[in-house]
Image 1 (cartoon, rainbow, N blue to C red):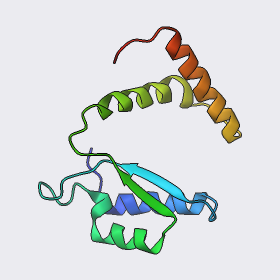
Image 2: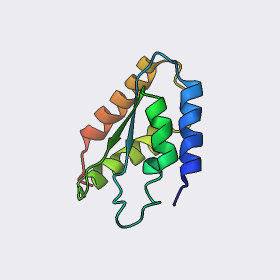
Image 3: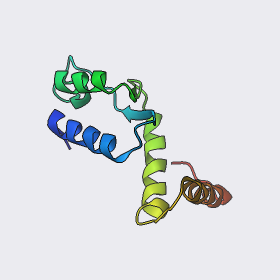
Length: 114
């Protein structure tokens, strides 16, 4: 699904409003090739770049190009999200970490390749 830079900015503003101002934030995004489609990379749009420059607590990190091995990681994150985290209620970071650790421990009792 394609998103616009306006949706990206709306998302960033929501994160900015809903997180403590003293926190440094790290966002991970796909690394698109602007030479192929300049507007696919909504996070690279001039308006988004200007917003990020004015909000230095937001640190962008991009996945490397030609990194097909990351598809396996994405599948793992999808699985942990659908099987354990979605619809979960975590009242603290430690509860969230405990849920993730429990999922990983259970997953590792009978590991299977992706």
